[in-house]
Image (cartoon, rainbow, N blue to C red; front, side):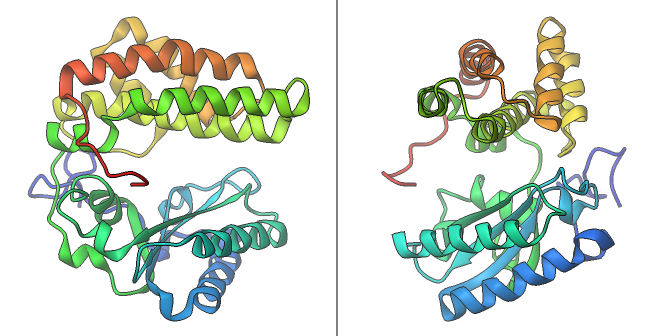
Length: 278
């Protein structure tokens, strides 16, 4: 049960999204294959595995949505673990045309359950991830409200990300003498999603709820920043229908991004520093 369609339970906590029961028939074979391959590839290294994104929310679109997996390992992931995850993702993506890409996020159990990550990766696992294999670590995490602390710890590092994003756009353009369509499209989807979600979490405590629907996120943001509403709606549109256009990407990272980072810091402060590689 949700409160006023704002993603909250009857006590005002953010309700967990998604379930295996919501996975549409078209995506059940790819989910089953991913589950089996994760178990085969990672074996005893794996603590637990989760789905997140549109597939477990039941809103995925055939040949347009990606499949997102979070794998929590018993130890901190190594370079070999990341290589195995990349190979697994590529193999599932090749085999199943129903999905437009497969992403695998790796984290170590101790990190997910650490105090520092309680309002970042911990919240992500507990509220946005659907259990697929192993123990559900949400049992060891608190319940969450749409607070300023949650806003700061989830997206209060945008300013640190923007230089990396600019470098990624430059590389994609330079490597192809104008921009490889697939890579630019992937960056467009990734960056625009992140910016829309950051814009939403900027106003989330005032709105008092949670949603993962990008169009709704942009609409809620626009209520509090009407002068920026059109730009955020445009970002949500290219998140939904990414384009292989370097100029669109540069507008995101050079115009919307810097303003949003500065406003976020002014309202919520900066995310607590993480150690190198975190």
